[in-house]
Image (cartoon, rainbow over all chains, first blue to last red):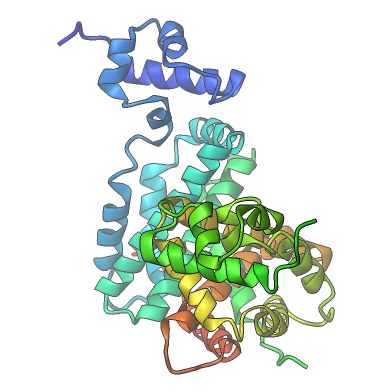
Length: 194
Length: 194
């Protein structure tokens, strides 16, 4: 074991995000990150498998957590109410307070095609986790699938809206508003094709 | 120009789909495809840039077509009605009658990680095209974004349901039903978090 480094992981994360933003994700190397952080590459690889993991670490457990959260929501809640019920505390615990970091992270991902693909993959994995959660509640297959897609849409649209504003609005409030607008879109009367 | 080959493109497509299914997409080479089709590799490359294009050819024009179609829908239609109005003829023209081919195609894509990623990318591109169509109608940004995600969800879920059944149901009818279930999900009353 190496010498203990105070806040090594946080320092590596900050240095990596700075460099990804300054010069691009593809152009940044692990030695550059450790030089900026004043740490060794050996320390880096004790915390992260590679530079991409700096952006996605800690997300492996999210799908199983989401499935369990939804499965355990009160049985009386409708699918949309489950989404509302589950996302408020999840959003508060996972995102509120990390505004600047998440905004930097999103700019880095938007600028790199490979990272954008990884985000799409993450979205699909999250939708599948939500679907499994609904199935465990006894929701029928089609409703579970559509509710999962709606949930992931509301979630990702709300996150984007939150990170795009500078007014200091809370993510929780933006989720509520996005859900309201979505309900308005879906409630409109279908006009038959001519 | 080479000798005219009757139905060369169709024969190459059939041979490629057969081989992708039999031995996997990654394991199949262009010479194997042309041997199966009884044609030369030179003929293959007159029709396709590479083997992947056999699965995705002709899709480059779809986003612009979708944007224009939605922008030109009657101004009085609500967002969901626009989706219904646009998808019925689009689905009939593009998919009905290609059931077996599309089913094979989907099995091939599901079996290969790179092709699944390509499909996710396609979905994101389609959602962006639908969003642009709504913006051209004067729909506000948030509604356009949510309506686009709903449209792509209804479309891809309907396509999957259609290809998963053997009862001979029409895609158009499945789209109508999927839209109905989605409206049911989204119309349910929100119960406030406890």
